Amino acid sequence: MTIKTIESGATMRTRLSKSIVLALRTLMGQGEPTELSLDLVAFIVLALEKIAESVNQSAQAWEKRDYWLKADQFRMEWAWAERICKVLCPAVLARDWTKIIPELTKLAQPLGKIKVSASHRLGEPWIGAWQALVQNQKS
Image (cartoon, rainbow, N blue to C red; front, side, top):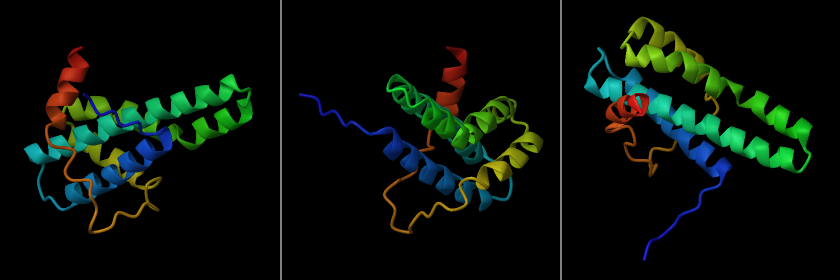
């Protein structure tokens, strides 16, 4: 028997946004880039990809119901995720911290209002993210 959990797009975007904020906080606490830093920024890239994918799925569902305006507005509201991801991904793979840091600063702006409590249950979802990103790019 398998247990399937179905997470709505909104729930997933909220969870991923909070996880990104947590990853940014952890990254800001580091002095020099380390292996953990690579995992953190790789996780941010993977999370942004999932957010962009979720936005497109939600917008397509609205378009099927002829809510064209709502779908376009929703895509524009979340366009930052795909835009930052497209710039951040090659910089992360090249380990170019001079390009990564300004993009992370841009990322902090749309996520500025998100609160993550001290007793969150998000864990450390970025562990192993660097390997996952490298594998993603190979396939």
